Length: 227
Image 1 (spheres, rainbow, N blue to C red):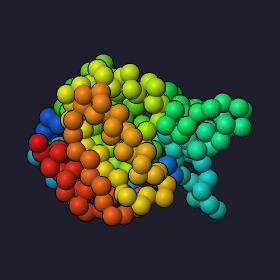
Image 2: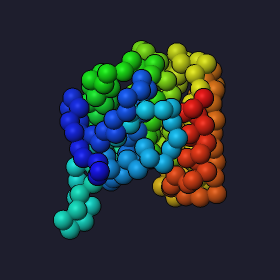
Image 3: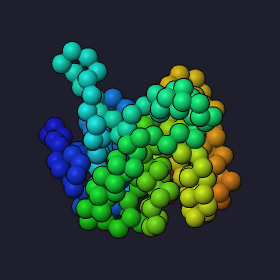
């Protein structure tokens, strides 16, 4: 059966229903949609009867003639360029994207509407979706079961550094291509460093590739989910 969109709180999502007591929420990247990561539910080994949720980002924009994509918030690079042009001395990692808080509230509403406590939900995403998931994870007063950062990067550095201290001891999973032309490898390592300095632990998987999720990463991600 082909997956279909369903509405959960304020967001549409692809839901792959399981009968167990665990849930995985994965957020797609910029320009994709809820169907982009949905095949992972059949490809990545997780705990038996896990429910998978693939939310659809709230912003829609044209990506070509008759084609549209989705975004959680506008591109960070565009906001950085605007801030620099206005005379502000900021780096990519310090940017707080406009629309981030609104998107987080909608994703938070989806999480709250699920019939699972946060301690049974692993949250994550790819690229911009990984940034979205990381921001929600760090701002949550309750711990999730897991955090999966696939080709994400460091933004909101000042806030995240303060918030991460409350998550000391938590184990995360992060992966990134060494030759990523979209989100540089060095910025992903900065995010890893921030998390580790705050007392979190986990696994950083680097690979000889670009902005992608290779098979080797999926296998290590499965090990993380089955831990």
